[in-house]
Length: 184
Image 1: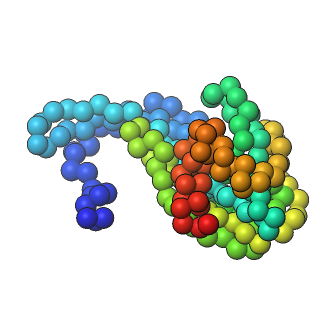
Image 2: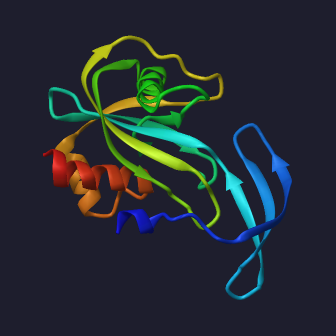
């Protein structure tokens, strides 16, 4: 069954053009032909790449999280450290790098929990969720535009937030559900 879950598409690509190319995303406009119906299908794809979300667990039953303004929703959110996997970088290396850049903690151990596609209807973005343990305090290396506050939140408090619908981002919710189902 798992082989058929993500089998290759049989649509014929007729044409493709780049509608927008920014620093973080590219938007493509595409036309496909469905071989079963001969229907022409128009799509817009947001090419966003591969990211990592890191769940850093301390020895004191806390998660290291960040408070960061998110301009698309015009809110400051509490979230796990995250960032893009750079070209030529292994997922684990990118996760360790992003954790240290944003929080000033380096993971002694890192474990891949899940891969998710947050918006497959229009984007190719893949997010890999990791659990980080044996944290070592170093120092942060924020990008010049990052406005991040590092906080420690008791795991019990995060579980309550998850149970009460206060966690609203898909990567955090999926990562936490996995954590509480399989890691604890």
